[in-house]
Image 1 (cartoon, helix red, strand yellow):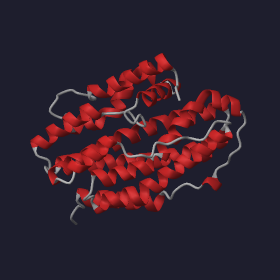
Image 2: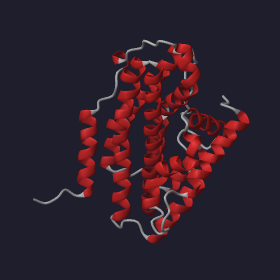
Image 3: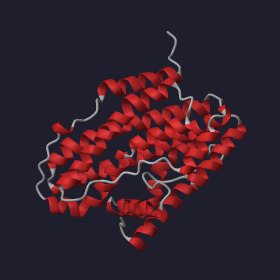
Image 4: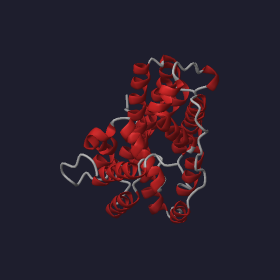
Length: 288
């Protein structure tokens, strides 16, 4: 029997995600909190950050429509039928949680940036759109890996605090859905690079653009969000070993985009972004 192609495997993966992981429901959440002040003190800013990032999924979809005007059926099925419905519910549930903790509602940034619109104008050229696709996959893989690491730590922390309702009915269900998103981006980026569809100059351009535009999840190219991300990293203990964290976040693009650089475990710009965020946090605090 013939083995399914990479494209078929990706399509089947997306279909399984939709079938096995329907969007979470707010009314299925157990909202009992033993110590709201304790949870808010330890994780309030982290929950606020994650809620905002998850709620920005609607802007992310608009950005995709700008960057990928000729998006593939599989990509559209993923972001429209699986990713967006799941992520928006993550955001709504986390935002309700932080309001239950006595914190203000999240304020997501939903406007597509001018820079993104400029890149979208170029993306109508098919060769450039292929580069944009690769950057989209790499950004998605980096973002979802950061989410998985964060939710793992938060879950263990909630258990430690005795907040089993939050751990079992909010954080655990959310973190179960994130690895499937990561797998989609990893599989798609790997298939695109290994298929030979990208010429050497396209890979070179992708490396240049990735190096110049790399951002940690939710920072949106703004220092105030970089400082907040530094606060999240500190609250979750990632600042104790930034090299280890950079390795986890940047491994996929090191393997695919920088394969010609022997021994590179992660691109240097990942660690640079982390250090910048930590420095901004220490300088400014978790600014609003």
